[in-house]
Length: 132
Image 1: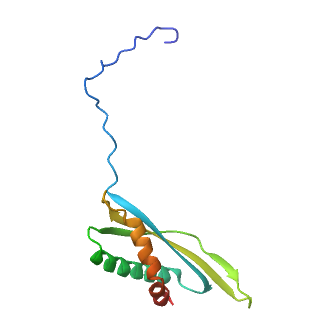
Image 2 (image 1 turned 45 degrees about the vertical axis):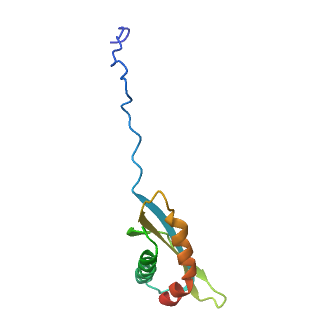
């Protein structure tokens, strides 16, 4: 009731803290972005994304065979809307950005993100060739 004095009751402090630190995520998430421009307006984006994911998986499998302790858990596609543009010849074209999150089993002694990104840069030609 309003105006009634309420007595506050709490447990006495414990000798040892009872709050534990939050658990660290078991995965390092490495974002990979593909930017593709000048695509035909009638391109089937689902097929393009599927092909890009296959190429990404192929590159990552080869990398994991060479890098000790690199364990890929999964690859998730992130949605990014596409834009429609007109090129110099006034033909409708599409630009697309396709993002993938690569989940890597965390290793406190190694940061796999820079290794994976460097590998993707080195294999740019293969990616480009496969999706054309």
